[in-house]
Amino acid sequence: MSDAPETSPADLPAIEFSSPGCFAVRNPASAALPAERWEPAPFRLGEHEPLERFEHPQEARAHALALLQQARRSLCLHSPDLESWLYHHSSIQEACTRFLLANPRNRLRILVGDSAQAVRNGHRLISLSRRLSSNCLIRRLNPDYPKEDDAFLLADDQGLLLRPKPAQPAGYACYRAAGRVRQLQA
Image 1 (cartoon, helix red, strand yellow):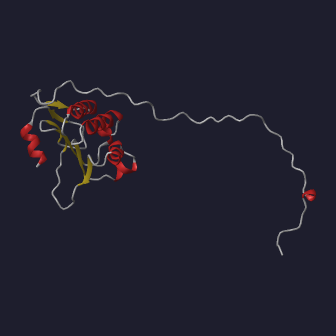
Image 2 (spheres, helix red, strand yellow; image 1 turned 180 degrees about the horizontal axis):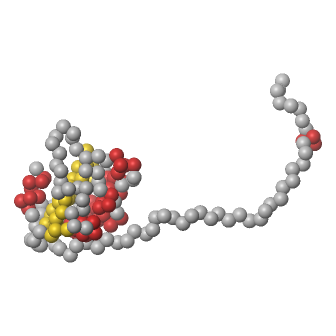
Image 3 (cartoon, helix red, strand yellow; image 1 turned 30 degrees about the vertical axis):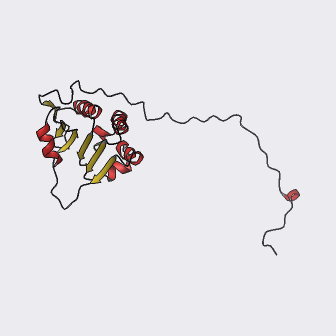
């Protein structure tokens, strides 16, 4: 026994259907414009001695890209939150990918204070670390250890990009600072 009412198709009224014509799908334009290419700073790693100070984000990006492109053995990145304005760009990801694929012994080590926002936003360096997990290491700072207030990037045993106040883009880059790089690596 079924609880459904007994009706036959002949008892149902006819439905009028008229097609209004063709439909076109008009999705809004993509908000993601093609990213502009960043240009690296014109200095050579291991050769340029003077300290290069910078105040603006564009200058910080140029120095970071120059260091990333010229590194041959190791890259160390210390950041409070993987600053998207500086490291979440296709030029940075491409430079890191080339560095990691150039030699199986190359290492990119990232020490980050809080990675939650970067993970939520799909940061490019996090996706890179998932693809090349044996050469790209991301670690969280231990909350029990005293933490550095600086944000820095170290390239090989010579290059340094340091920002004393991570909330501000101002800082300096040095392309031949072996002593300071050893201090920060310790």
